Image (spheres, rainbow, N blue to C red):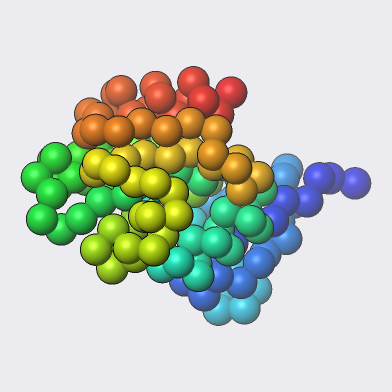
Length: 145
């Protein structure tokens, strides 16, 4: 019997049980029937953020950003590219600190962009400042291993 992983749907936040030995790239949500992985970061509200952290059995990387932030805009293409490369092994979220001020306060975000890597709902690594794609991928891989 294969190991079962819980994966949160990026579209409807339903919790999906997927066999770890099956290709997750092709998995679809049992509730909304959309792909569980799109190769793109998912915009997260306070509610969906909590669900992703608590219920995903894969690591979750969150980018805390704002529309007015120049370094955030500069890093966005790199973040998108690394999401496309590392999904379905890692879930990528984007948290707009202007829209989700309580969430930013909860995680003590003092400067943006700030990246946080979570495993099992707990912060395992944090990085302030923009990274290029190579540095971002290396940071994630170092902290996921």
